[in-house]
Every structure is written in C-alpha cells, then in structure tokens.
Length: 374
Image 1 (cartoon, rainbow, N blue to C red):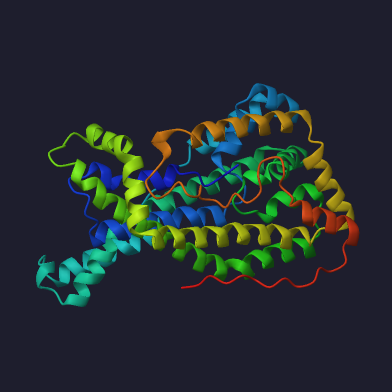
Image 2: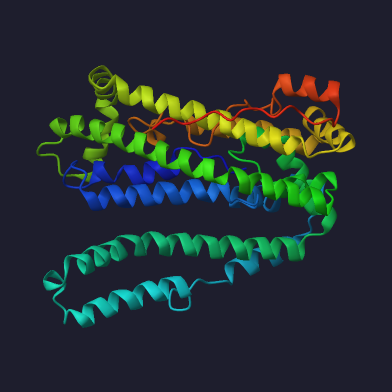
C-alpha cells in the first residue's frame, strides 16, 4: 500500500546537503515546496493501484497462485506497462508551458533580464515549475496506464481479492480511497457518497498540506543553517551527506532548544493530520450497511492466508525502512508523513468499533471538526 514514508521528502530536501551551499534561496525553496505538495496530493488522489501493491500481486508466485493470476495475465500487464511511453511534446499542459516560455523569449528578443518585472517573474516561475510538472504528469500517465492494464487483464474476482487486501491493510494507507470498498459490493449511491465525503473534506486537506509544508521547511531551514558550520571546505557529495548523519543528533537538539516554537507548531499540525485521517475513515465507514460492516471487520479480523502473510511482511519492511538512517531528514522524523493514527493490525479505532456494533447503521451525531490555527 502507499504510505507516505520519508523517501520522497528525503529526495527533495537532501538537495541542501549535496549542493555547494546550505542557504535556501527562493527557487530551491519553491521547488521543494512544489515537490512535497505534489507527493502529498498523489496520496490524496491515490486510487489504490500503487506500483508496490501491483508488484506484490503480480510478481510473487505464491500470491499469484492464491489469487489465480496466470503467467499470461502477468505478462500482459507487464507488457502494457512497459510499452507505454510519455511524451512531453504530446502533453498539452507541458506543451503549453514550453510555448509560453518561448513566447517570452521571442518578445524579449532573448534578453529576459531587460523584460518587465512581471514578465521576468512569470518566466522564472515557469522554469521552476516545468521539471516538477513534467515529472508529475509523467507519473500520472504511467499510473493511468497501469490502472487500465490491471482493469483490462484481471478478472472481477481477482480485482476484488486485491481490494480485500487493501481493506485489511488500510492502517498502512495514508488516506482511504473509496475504490477499496468495492470488495464489499457497493451500490451506486454509496459510491457517490464516498466520493462526496472525500471531495467535501478536500479544502481542509489543502489547508493542512500548506501548513505542514510551511512548518517542515521552516524547521529544515534552521537545521541546514546549523549544518553549514560543518561543511566548510567539504566538497565531495558523499562526504557532505555524511555530515548529516555524523552531526544529526546535536543539530536537532540545538535547533529544538533555540526554536522550540517551530517544533511545537509542527507537532500541532501533525496531530491535526492524524485526526483528519481518522475522521475521513470514520466518515467512510458510516456509509457501509450493517452487512458490509460485518464483512469488512471479518476481513480485518480474519484475513485469508495470503492477506495475513503479506500484511506481516509489509509491516517488517516498513519498520526496517523507518529505522534506516538514510531515510531520515533533520526536522522530518517527528512524524512519518501519511498520518499513521492507527497502528498496523488495528485499522478501526476500538471506540468506533464498539459504537458501530451497538448502534448499527443509525446516523452518528455530527462531530465537530477541529480547526487548524494560523
């Protein structure tokens, strides 16, 4: 399943560790922000067909046998994914950005520095956004191709078995996708309800993402400033990266002592994110009928053998990754991104489970939504 571990954040924020200076200029900061935002929205918009999930079911012989995926189905999906390509020349969004850049250059006769300030600002924005948007569009295209291939070559029964795994493993998912509940035989009305719930909560999520990124970048900037004293004369990229690991503890402690308000703000936003993810799950659970609820809890409490095996292996792999120092970034290990408010093996809060078993499908009292302060 797709959990938002520190991989993507580390890739973007280690830029400061390997460049010639730790000073965050405006361009670097905006690129970091854009990449982090794109990654978090990929979680929010995830339909469940994350490459890790697909590889688990396609390339493990024991799992393929349990679900009944043939070698031919596996090869068809693999070929369909490999044979698709992404072309920036054919992408309308990227093409439009290239054309706008070219138009600025033509109008300025190649001398952008002499162009009006507003034109220069937009030109810089386009140059910064272009590589980020290209990667974003490429990944979206590849994911769409993968989804199409899976839906084309797997049978409905096989797809439902994968959805069953996703339901059991939902505690490792940052934000639930309505599509996973297809294993419970949703009605058209329920599909719409689930989609409306997520759509209705999206403005709140947008605010959360912006605040979280602001808090993380502010804390990261302080860490980078502290690391600068250890980097004087260190030019080798590998050696510069080692500075991070060698001095991480003292840098984090010094920054926390000097700027406790930054960590406090990050903790506040983190807690909001955890509660937000839990509220999203509970809202979706309330859409399920009593029969669907019982089927879901049975899947979670008594999973098929292949689901139990994969869940255990996933947990071990995640714990190993979380404990690898190479996946840590100063200021970013107070919370593993992708709110993990429910621990693996307990995807349903016990209080909600008891309430639901008592009241059935009677409407829950409307719960007040916590606010995120400025």
